[in-house]
Image (cartoon, rainbow, N blue to C red; front, top):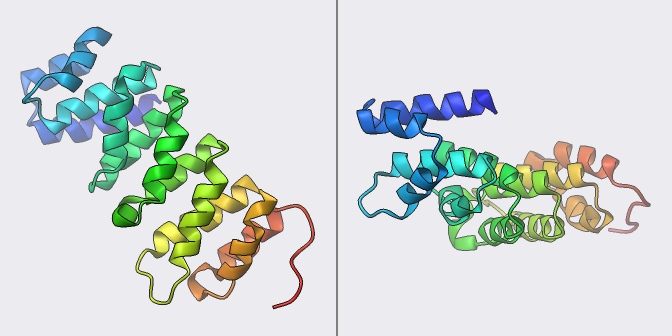
Length: 195
């Protein structure tokens, strides 16, 4: 976690221009001060992200809504830091929120980190959401191969027999076939017979 916080801090220090406000926020141990940043109007995005990450990794559920918004951000580093914090937050709403983001076709371009978070959480919502997302990616010329690949790999890691049909369908897609073979090998039970 120290390395993750260090990396986040350096990125946000550059984004903030290294202001005194940044240094104060990075140094404070006052969780009420951090939580206040999430609701005060006019706070810059870097400040909200830093406060949400620090609260989330400390298990403070006041960060939940902000972290979910960041998980669906267009900037991948923000999504990645939000996913790390949400994985440690321990909020029971996290898996449902990640599943909603992963399966939202209007935001599929930003689904990579919600998919990875679902795999890490191993929640009841994880396999159904990954199956749904992957099934939608198995159309000709789908541009979201990284999301599809993350679903295939995640379903292999989760090793749920319910994922077998969609993984077998993924075998027909050259970009996914090798990962699907490995994923299927991790799932217990007989393979489906027939075409």
